[in-house]
Length: 267
Image (cartoon, rainbow, N blue to C red; front, side):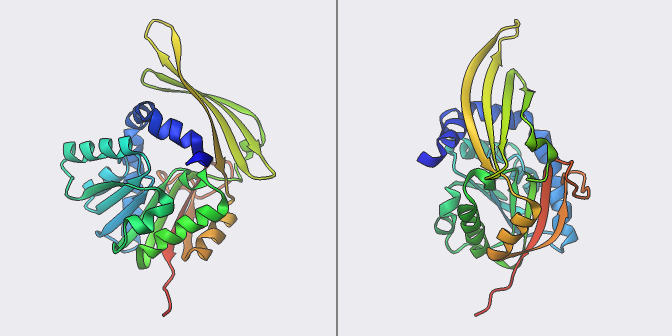
């Protein structure tokens, strides 16, 4: 994982910090899960097996299980998966929400023989690699999906967002954690670089640095992502902005959501 040293730092070495962020945004995961369930039902899937890629600590997978789906989530981070399993027990859905550790680039081997009615990807996880690797991951996910299976990519960042052309500084609070983020966009290679500084508020007005890391993500246009999906065996059916609102996609919205179907394979 040398080419993704920031993933190692944020999601594995200091998983405790990112778990705090995910726990503080659990209600957001529940909202996303409700919208995903609505889209699945609108596409004729009232129940069935759902695979969530890059599932984190289950903040979407567990609410989906509560909606009646059998969910299997995978993530590269063992601490995230351990926390997800504990939460599945706490929410009493451990029989319908299972979690495994896997690198997305090896998921076809990890889940060999499994078959799913739907695949879900939440946030900008695909952009961690280059476009060839992202396409290979989507192809592997297609190999685990039934013909006609539904793919939902929810609330990923996209290239059309006008603000990427500017340098932005963002401050966000997650409980006692404060995230200071400095964003720089490379328009030539369509990569988003963010310097994350995570600070701990001790409650007395003092901020202590917990982590500083530079993240690097590939940001796609809606057209680019649709083309990659088609080459990987998925045909896009519909496009949205923020999936929680089921809003029409338009560039001012920082989020892009897609619903696609697994293209039938020919023997």
